[in-house]
Length: 156
Image 1 (cartoon, helix red, strand yellow):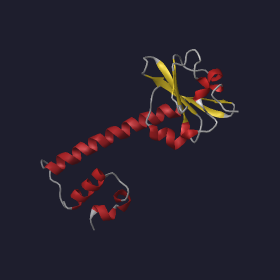
Image 2 (cartoon, helix red, strand yellow):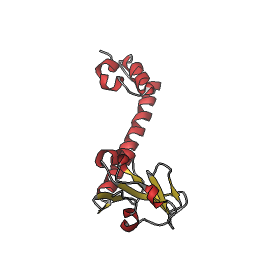
Image 3 (cartoon, rainbow, N blue to C red):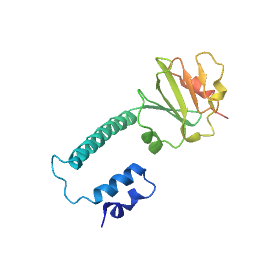
Image 4 (cartoon, helix red, strand yellow):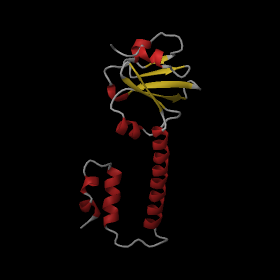
């Protein structure tokens, strides 16, 4: 059985590059050191291990993040940006706040999973809020936003 058939979960809906690699590797029965396949596997493995390490660090950051609630809406303050997959796994709604690099030393707040209770358009024009996305899903703040300003984004 070929790898692409054995691991059908990877075959369907996967990225075309993943499909090509699975198909190519399924034709190789032995991978010897010094071959192109061996170097490719080492390279892929190195990137994968780097990703896992980064993901683990992001998960630790997530677990130690400051959390509060504003009018019943969960707010999570992160000290740095983390992998989007983590917030998608652990947050179903609410507001995510983290440092932003444009402009330097600013902060951004993001509406998680299009939570209908949050609309940052309600902050448009306020002092200290230089940017609000037209769809209201994100706002940039000159300083870390406190719960009082975030409360103004809550639709009641």
